[in-house]
Length: 115
Image (cartoon, rainbow, N blue to C red; front, side):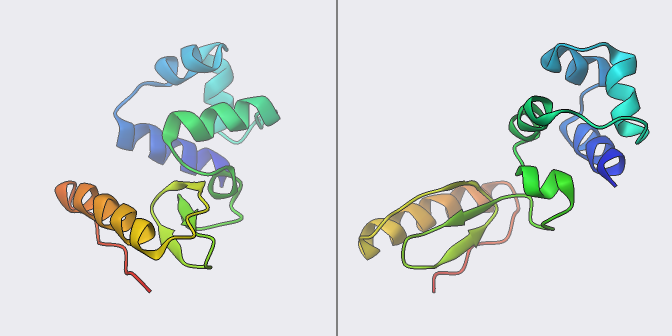
């Protein structure tokens, strides 16, 4: 499962195995083993892969189907981002969601619903 996700993410990003391997500081064949499910990255490499592909470690590990999520202090979640923010002020929270939505709309992604 990890191998398929890595390959899909790499192809979506339009990079080669060598480019990802260089970022990780490993050989291209070493990274290829990840995509072939012959080896698994260590914790440090998992973190670097999540950062490189802008997804959560949970997504890479198959724990979550959501690539990224923001969790707000009031319990509202938004799909599509990889951070945990505590924004207690409703006006600030709505402003942030509106900004995120404008960026998502620009890239043809669905808007985040304000709850």
